[in-house]
Length: 249
Picture 1 (cartoon, rainbow, N blue to C red):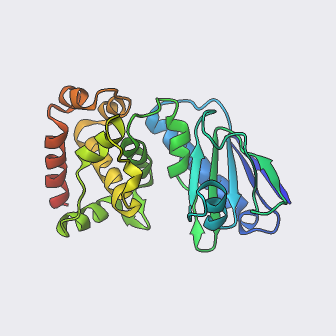
Picture 2: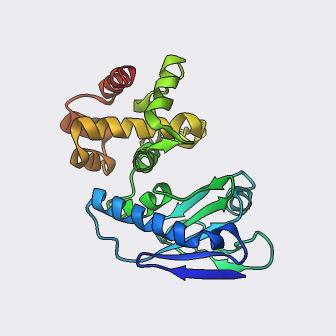
């Protein structure tokens, strides 16, 4: 049976008898904190309640949304997603059916995967700014708001990859989604390599150029041109400066 709890900015849905039901007050308080933090940073007033769906395992989410691939969470920030309007089950079987709504977050919540926090909510709320041309920037902002990947600071991951010679080019990761002539995608790479690096790069830009310039770049339609105007250098040079910054961490 699906149970519902409502707060000022959320409508939470979860299964009766689940860990999410047991912890719902704590979950609600955490997400309200995240909501205030994200809206304050982005300087927006989000106009509706976010529909939040808590599943008992990442496998259930993967089976529903990712062809069986394990998934901790995803967001549907507008009305245009291919999953919006689908009939699915919160428990993964023929019971507990619901229609997937827009402006929603779908997250696993079990003992070993409590996937709450800033990340997916950032995607939903940041859609008020724009739908970015680059998935690197989209995930980078969410990771910056998170601060960590599997419990370790994003910059720790970036430095680890740098020292192993495995740090991917942030220029390439930004441009791969904006370039209509490429068949590559940000999501083609291992998320453990891309997500924390995107978060670390976003932190570098925030701390060295400011949030307003980042937000302008986030909504850019011409990354090379806007990098020169906003940061005073090419994307390639920006990557070099990011590497220097990481090396000193």
